[in-house]
Amino acid sequence: MAITKQKQRRSKRLRPEHMVRRTKEEALETRNRILDAAERVFFDKGVSRTSLADIAHEAGVTRGAIYWHFANKGDLFTAMFDRSLMPLDELIAATLDTKEPDPLGRMRDIFIWCMRNIALDEQRRRVFDILFLKCEFVEEMGPVRERHQNNMREGIERIERGLRNAIDQGQLPADLDTRQATTLLHALFTGILHDALMFPEGVDLDRDAERLIDACFDSLRYSPALRSSYSVA
Image (tube, rainbow, N blue to C red; front, side, top):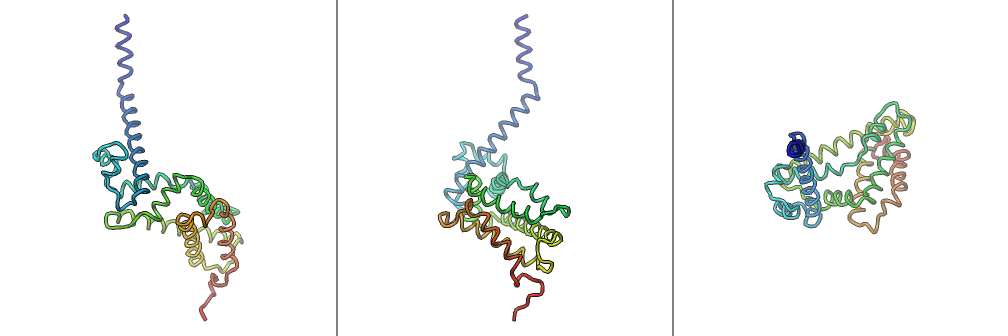
């Protein structure tokens, strides 16, 4: 009787669904360990000077394990960055919603949240440091460059749609040139992030986020150069 119960317990432990679940969990753990290692090595050495062998050594896995999860270094880099993408879907959706009564306020929330999050979240700050300062878009990183360009294009389109919503709600001048305003706002925001990463003692993103973003938005409200009727003398 005891032997039969022991066999039943062993059989339960080895059920296929349990084995599949354990295998998936182990694979996910390995994948995350590789991403963590890539993040550390990219930060220390830069992307172009880092090899998959360096990452494998840091992660304590074989190169084959890396290729099981990622096609190449560019694919690994993209996965590392995607893992740190900011959870802003709700705020972005509100900005783009034509029924949102305060689209400019929601956009302001997004920019301020991004700045403060990069300032306070060490892991996310490290990833953006790699993207802004330690990534050379050489030939092997071509797909990453293209992906980054697509992300920028989508981000710029979202900003312009949000600005149009703000015009419709009377929050910005009706004759605002939304294309020029979007270009300026995107450049100011990414420039502030770049400067904060390059010269952290000179830019306090946590302390100054609201003031800096409000200054950017004030330029949209009051600058004659951002009006559709503006012309160079």
